[in-house]
Amino acid sequence: MTKIAVLGAGSWGTALAMVLSENGHHVNIWGNMPERIEEINQKHTNEHYLPGVKLAESIIGYTDLEEALKDVSFILLVVPTSAIRSVTKQINALLDDKQKPIIIHASKGLEQVSHKRISVIIDEEMAVEKHSGIVVLSGPSHAEEVAKRDITTITAASSSEIASQAVQRIFSNNYFRVYTNSDVVGVELGAALKNIIAVGAGALVGLGYGDNAKAALITRGLAEISRLGMAFGADPLTFIGLSGVGDLIVTATSVHSRNWRAGNLIGKGLPLEEILENMGMVVEGVATTKAAYELAQEKGIDMPITAAIYRVLFENARVDEVVEELMLRDRKAEHSTSKMTAEEE
Ligand SMILES: NC(=O)C1=CN([C@@H]2O[C@H](COP(=O)(O)OP(=O)(O)OC[C@H]3O[C@@H](n4cnc5c(N)ncnc54)[C@H](OP(=O)(O)O)[C@@H]3O)[C@@H](O)[C@H]2O)C=CC1
Ligand SMILES: O=C(CO)COP(=O)(O)O
Image (cartoon, rainbow, N blue to C red; front, side, top):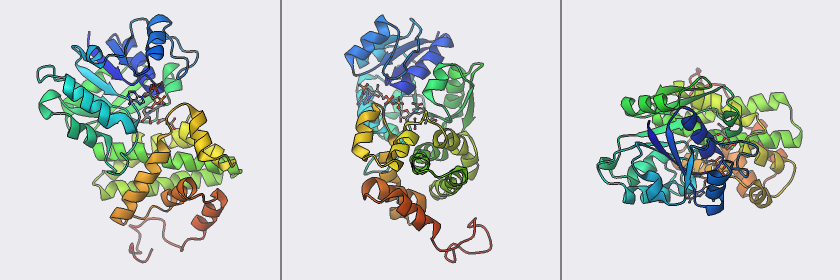
């Protein structure tokens, strides 16, 4: 039996712990709120994050990180992006160089200020001799549906094929199918940036726009996600895969998505602070919009939709106003690979 620590007792950490435990693994779940961990251990529920879901009794909750990490061969980090660096530092301080677990992360975002991807942060904070590889687990997967054992497909991306195949092995079952991928940059950028588009998609629905607008936003959103990704060396194929268009569809069209729901309320005119305060769960797309907007400016990459959503979130622009601006931009070719040069566009 493989022993695995899941760090983060929120919606996604709990749903992934359920998959691992159903696959026969020994699962420790670590959280920072004693009441939540007690509920997991006593009632086998996590009502705030996964209401109505019964957890396996074999999933053991811990508030003590050292105990949660004891003898595990995989560590799954699934805390909000803003907490990744501090939690990784704590793991690094607790591990010796004999245990050597594989480090997996399933979070979706970019670090504020540094704009770094999550695997880069982990790599910076974990001594290389203390782990056996870093793997990104990402794809179209709402926790609520995974917890109901609905069919889900997802990607395990790593520069180490041995590590990504090990992650594929521990998670795969008849409702959770895992593919491997070596394009870590593309998978992480696709995962982070789709949340921005999901906020925009929710806002369009909130304002009453229809399916044409939704398709336009998703398609042109994917174009700018790919543009930024390729500038950082991502494989363009990744963006037509699970962590590209797949995750974009599932997030930008679903009421399960916290990013879509936040956008929807923005479209209906509610203030951002109030929306975030009432959500009770992380809305990664807000901070990621800021990071991606700054990154695109820094690198001179054209991301008009991201810039428009940035203006709505951080400069109080109205959604209908930025939609109008987007629609009336200079005319251009659909693909930069068409006969027009990038400058002519
Ligand atoms: N939900 C989903 O369907 C999916 C989510 N993701 C990604 O997974 C990541 C986590 O999301 P999700 O589980 O949904 O978020 P939730 O908001 O549901 O839960 C976040 C969890 O992280 C905990 N947490 C926050 N800060 C810290 C910290 N410093 N140390 C320890 N624990 C901390 C919270 O604890 P507390 O309760 O004490 O606040 C909570 O248990 C995000 O990046 C998200 O984009 C990816 C795929 C699907
Ligand atoms: O990443 C997700 C689905 O793949 C979940 O999206 P939200 O964080 O918007 O709920």
